[in-house]
Image 1 (tube, one colour):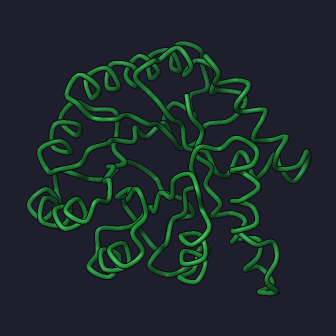
Image 2 (cartoon, rainbow, N blue to C red):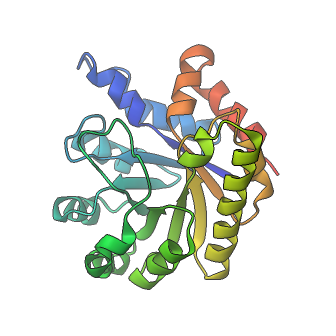
Length: 237
């Protein structure tokens, strides 16, 4: 299982004082050196953390895989086509939210989705849908032209009992199997930490996990390389 590291919160800390440090690019390069297989950043419409210049610098320097999380807007489509990340992940976005609160409402936006995805795929950019672990969402992602799905693990991360956690893990496992059998690549993310990620190494269909906040929070205490190695040790099969 691979690990993609989200560097958004490095930018959040930098923006608190606007003095240039810590640098998201420096963190991204350190993450690559520490074993990350990809770097994730979310260019939000309000630019609350990652900014356009950050994205440009990441594109110039990342040697693994750059995954640009973004809303389904004309502005973001144009930026993706100009920047050419290896992967675009379409996520829901609300300005008032602190972090992404759920999967993409794919059924509500399906009429526009295929046309939005088409030029990205034609330009050689992979497209992933950040969705709830549900069969209908997987089917619609495939029909719209996505080649990957990222299963939202937020509900799993909030479970407070072993019974509820096992039930949600079964739902994620079933969705991963269905998506893989349909020909989609499968990743997972949101709310995963050193305390809850171990069971995912048994779900062979999930080939990568995406983690940001938990790694950066641990990095404050133990350093970024150590925080990344800690996760990698837990997800090795």
